[in-house]
Amino acid sequence: MNTVSIGSVKIEQTAALSPMASVADRAYRELCREFGASYLVTEMVSAKGLCYGGAGSLELCEIHEAERPCAVQLFGEEPEFMARAVEIVNRFRPDIIDINMGCPVAKVVNPGGGSALMKNPDLAASLVKAAVSRAECPVTVKIRSGWDENSINAPEFAAYMQSAGAAAIAVHARTKKQLYGGLADWSVIKRVKQAVSVPVIGNGDIRCGADAEKMYRETGCDLVSVARASNGRPWVFSQIRHFLETGEELPEPPLEERLKVMLGHVDRIIMYKGEDTGVREARKHLAWYLKGVRGAAKIRAHTSEISTRDDISRLIDEITGLSPEAT
Image (cartoon, rainbow, N blue to C red; front, side):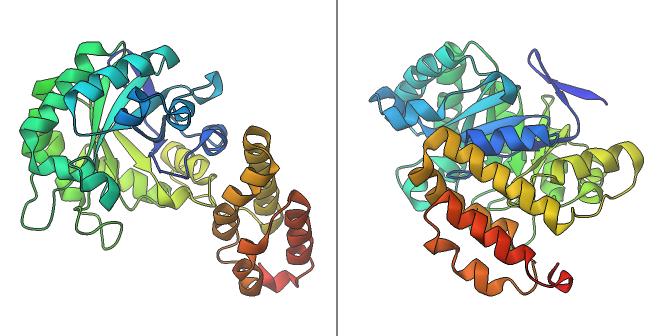
């Protein structure tokens, strides 16, 4: 398998796991890595929260050997806080530090962070320079196509971030206005690749091996990244790897295997976070794993009522008791 280098970090050119807030925690990252994700990124961490010593922010920076290569993703809009946050993150020995310039949610955008930075390239460049000045690893940037359809500035913005010291650019090929809807415009990824000399990571609408191969071929990107398509489907990474190696698309696992992965995922969350917190946080994952299980819509609707690991075991027994046609 070919590799791409971001600084001294070598990454297999299969598929990476995109950062996802409140989703891509340690349990999720480790599981995706076991299914073949070639590169992982943490949930985004507030630079200011780190500087103020928030225990939750510090916990999000933890990287374990089974996750490498893995990046810590920071967000913020103040260079001085970004620089101090990078110094703190260095203690966790990340392979890469990524700066979020693509998040579209209001609590990140309204203060001037996330995708709002694409309207303020000078500030964005200052953040990159501040991070690079303190980082002990490569610094990368995650961007969107632009703010809206009338301001698609990703190629120019990416070139500016490279000049500020970014070692790679990840592009979610949707605008801030699109949020997570509509179609990703892969032509923007191609234009970014043409505008910079550092590696480009393409993101948006990768759901299977054929999609990954098509993005590589059409955009020339150096790595593809999967986000929501892995929700309830961590095996998508092994499917992508298999397709890139053989040209054959693997089918979805049978129901029994999917439920086994689901329970193992829940157990891993519980191991790291305790049963109360773990089960509560697992509810959304249960709904994703059970998506498409015909006849189980009523069961999925009650996942919010699950409060113990035993409840999940009973849920699985109920699902497997359905007729074979339910799969």
